[in-house]
Length: 117
Image 1: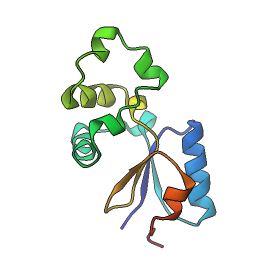
Image 2 (image 1 turned 180 degrees about the vertical axis):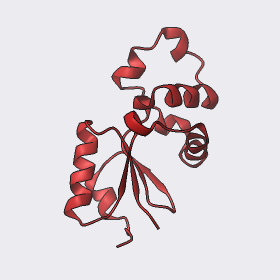
Image 3 (image 1 turned 135 degrees about the horizontal axis):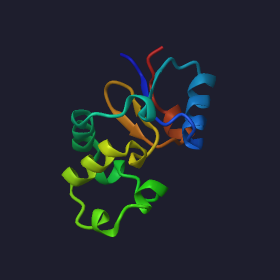
Image 4 (image 1 turned 30 degrees about the vertical axis):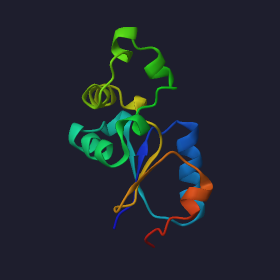
């Protein structure tokens, strides 16, 4: 079972999550949205599991800079389209441990995960 950390390299929260994983000796692959993007199918799967409201970062600069028309009437399909077009709108990090996904970084939540070693 592989562990993958999804996010953006220079994000402060991502740096904290990566440092925590490294200090705990957790092997993981890093998927940088700025380099590799994100596909619609993966976001659909995540939205089904977690809910699009959890994944869409409405507090971030990228979302706040959207035209009001783009922010109104959000649906799952519209949110996915926005996140595919601008992956920096996805809350970070998304930690994929194979059996489930965890959004955001909280050391106590990560500490409770039974990571494959």
